[in-house]
Image (cartoon, rainbow, N blue to C red; front, top):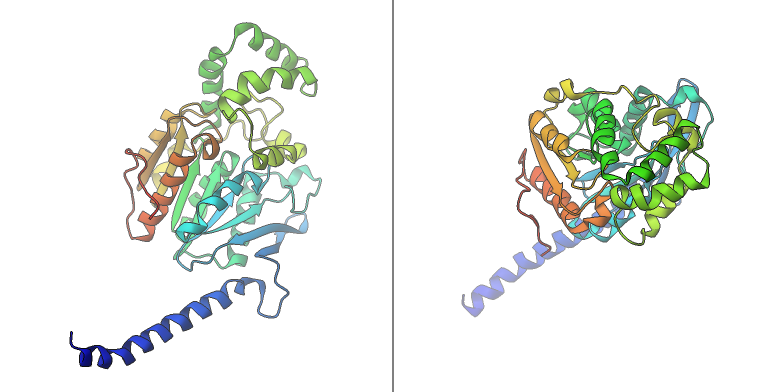
Length: 355
């Protein structure tokens, strides 16, 4: 190009830069738009009012990032744990332009904690998630839902009722059947344990001595360190989340035992309904998980548009003990769906490399 040609193109270039600058400025101003234009800014935190059959309560949410096309709502496990163990995602998702939202379910951590057993029902939690979605302005054009452990049950239930409002679904470390999880715990996990240790654990459970210090002395090295998180030192976000578990919610829904489910979720089973899910769905399983990874691979094949991510070194908290595989697979799935794909092949890690 001649010098004259370069100069003639300059006004166009300047106009383009001004346009981009204006767009960037608007994006920056709109970052906290959801908090209200005249509201005091709170770093993305919103207390969302929730209507329940037992009255009005508030749940805590916090938004990271700004992407009109990709908004990932996180459903923590427990039931009754907290968002805190998801904090590792702050090290990865913002750099990829993925907006995500922490959310403590009713009864958990920074949300209201009413003491009423009637509130701890799957159907009520589903309606709570829908109210949170509406309050945050999430839609089919941008709404991704990730449920981990109990959050995976909640995510499946939500999708089976409201999948027309979802852009993508992630079921992390959760089987589609609690009876089959119980069978896996009994027939696979228990048999991997020292028989003497297992016998003592069973004895304490039979006597209802779940608060006996010896119970945790046995579980931590023989179960938690092998199947919950395999790191020698558990990360601070995991410790904080576990320390805050609401025992009322947990015991009513999960039951007091760490080997299988005996609470209200004991007979929960959605295997036959997975075929009704058409939204792009990622199922994440891990070799050392409390959940059967083969069952979760089957789940990915059962839904209409399923992808499967296997974490070969991971356990239940594979976002920590197989972090590279977990996070890169999650990012690859979200980016693929954002690009218009319904499935993505995640059989060849690392699937996605940072630019």
